[in-house]
Image (cartoon, rainbow, N blue to C red; front, side, top):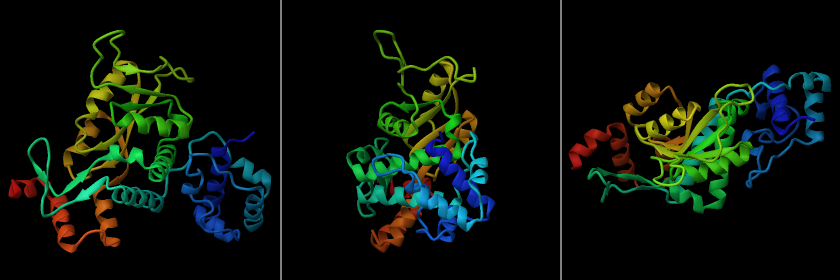
Length: 308
C-alpha cells in the first residue's frame, strides 16, 4: 500500500519528468490549476487529502503514461524541495495571517519600547497565533510542508519544542508529520529527575544513528537563544542540523552567522520583509508608516540610535 506522501511524490516527479510544475500538470490534465498545489494536500484540520483516481487517470492520459511508469516514480526518497514560487506563496500566507490576527503591529507615531529600552516601529507576538484556528491551521500545514520538502520526512526522527513558545507549534507540526515530539527547557528543572528534556528520545534511530531532531520555536531575531536548546539536545545525544520558526526577523546579520556557527540550517515561514511587502500590496497601513518601517528594516541599529 502506498502512503499519502508517496502518491504525491509520484505526481510531483511525473510533473518534473514531463517538464511541468504541479499546477502545470493539473492544467494539462484538464483539472483546476491549483489541484496539485502543496497547500491543498492537507485539509484545514491537518487531515491528508488524496488525489482522486479520476484525477490520476486524467494525468496518465494527458502525459501518455502507464500506471507502471507512475509507480516507478515512487520510492522512499525524500520529496523534492519546494519551488521558489511555492515558498513565496507560503511566506505571503504567513505574513497575511500575522497581520490579520494583529500578531504583528506597525506604529510610526508611537514606537514600541522593548524590555531593553530600545524602540521599534514594529512589534510581533507569535504566541497570539495559537488562539486563531483558521490561521493556525494554515500556518501549521505550511510548516509541515516546508519541513517535509526542505529536509525530507524520512530525515526527521523527532521534533523538539523550545520552552515555552515553541511547544504548541512543535506539537501541531509533529501531529501533521506523524512524528514523536519532545520539548527542551532553558535549564534543567530543579526537582525530580532534574530533566532539561521532557518526553522520550531514543539513543538511536532505526538506522542505528543518533536521532535527527528538528528544533521548533516561534521566532528568531539574531539566533542567540537557539544555542541553549541546541546544545542541550546535542548533549543528550541528538543530531540537530535544522531549526524551524514561524517568523524570522531577517534584518540582523548576526542571525545568519550564529546559525552557521551552530551548524544549523534555519527554516522560516516568513520575515519582516514579507510582512512589509504584503502590507504595501494590500494597503494595510498609511504611506508614512510604511516608509518608517522600511527605514527601520533597512538599518535597525541606525534607526534606534536616531530615536533613542
